[in-house]
Amino acid sequence: SDITFLKIVFKVWYDGAKALHWKEVLCSGADDEYAVCGMLKGETIATTFDIKGARTKFPKGNYNIILQGFSDDSENNIVMCLNFTMIVKQDAF
Image (tube, rainbow, N blue to C red; front, top):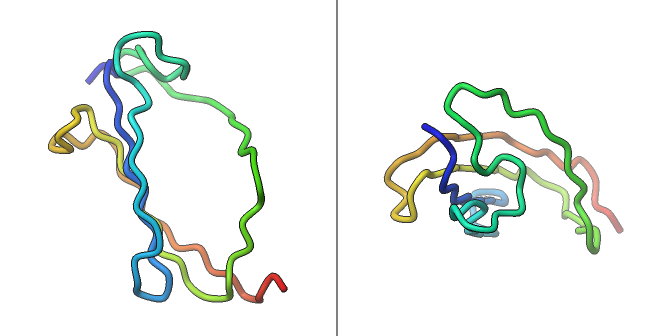
């Protein structure tokens, strides 16, 4: 579908325990700041972004990460799902 509304849900598990659950509406249909907002069905998304702020030091272990995108606020209509594992092999200290 066209991207007029986009809600992102980001979940992280660390060694089997939930470590983070974050939700954010990226596109609401009015005064959206992201280039992906307003794109039409079938258009290719190619973008880059910077991550700013303090760097997080991750403890050694396995992190399961799920990133979901929904076209509605009720989180019923999923338009994207990424599921990946991040493995930190040594402590940052």
